[in-house]
Image 1 (cartoon, one colour):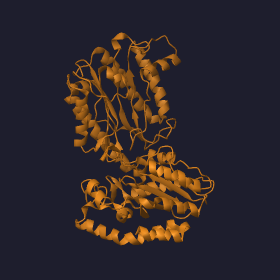
Image 2 (cartoon, rainbow, N blue to C red):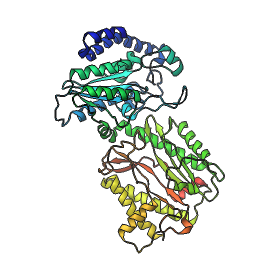
Image 3 (cartoon, rainbow, N blue to C red):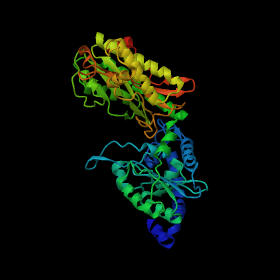
Image 4 (spheres, rainbow, N blue to C red):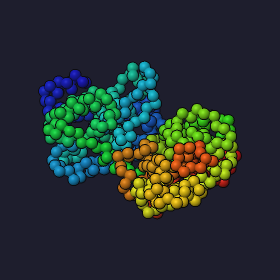
Length: 501
């Protein structure tokens, strides 16, 4: 097959892209139909490199590409991308080429891979879970074309690593116009650029996903007149920022699973346990409820360890009288939750722990309520610093005789992290979107004020040293006000003490 394609290239190199598409379409259409019929009969269940409605009906419904997300949804996403790229372009006559790579396999040692996690931008627009793939969008005034490059079927590799979708089934499964082997990507893109050297090539060259592909792209861009990549990252994130109805449903379930798992973990905890045991408990409870894995390495911080914001060592014994700060969430069918709860390991807050917990909880509830006004995340952070400073003054942790600027500075010393971030497929989702824009319906964000006190914290009385408390919920922004997706995870002081007891 590839030998014939090479001969085609030598004859007409500038038209190789379109002719190669036609060649492979003719070669694979019959196989695609045959494979689909075999899947329906049940004689060829491992035809694809990811779950389908045929092989995994308990996960994927008919018409869906991924659990809970339909083929039509992916087509709408790709249409939005075309609209975003072609809107307000200075020269709409130029050919637009968008290249989105999948994640490669990463190995921990020799032939032992880490658990694979797909590049979320690629997954969002393709639905394809296979490593090393590439999605290419081409647009030149006519109907846009989507070409998916995937690994060819290989019996030896599939014996070790499992089935591949292959070129034969890719267009039918993922709804792209064409599918080609990865080996043909370089020549395909070369031919497109040779046809129009004024082409604009959209490719994220800052965050390298596939190192080998990146080297090829850096060579190919030299064939264009501009010799500069256009970065599509912010366009991707603008589209991903507002969640669709099916994404919201998946996020609700992710938040419910993590909430229930943390409740079980609080109930299970007792003095003398290790942080690692609580890590294992929340991991187990999330997976048993349907999550594929945790969304990030959790923070399980007993006592003074809670003052390390990203403490993930999780190897200390938790003593009676200590609090546990757990920051954990799960990934459910590609969507993440992110929750923090703090509780007394022995079931009862000390007076200092109690008063400080009430401060953080009161600030958090006020911030969630204020989301109805659609502030920016940065404005929510400034609001948090003012609220936190005033409440810490009320309990005598910060002096009352300082001006407003000093108060904000002091509050920041007690909570040196932002109070919110966007949430979705990634825990810190859509990172290219500024936190200075006002929130909108369809966004999902976190609200997570905290207080961390050490001997170096300004003004802190000694009896508060070593205390660290954070409370975090995931919130959907709606036209009718904020909806707390993690409401199943109790946070009122009496509820926490009851669970921990």
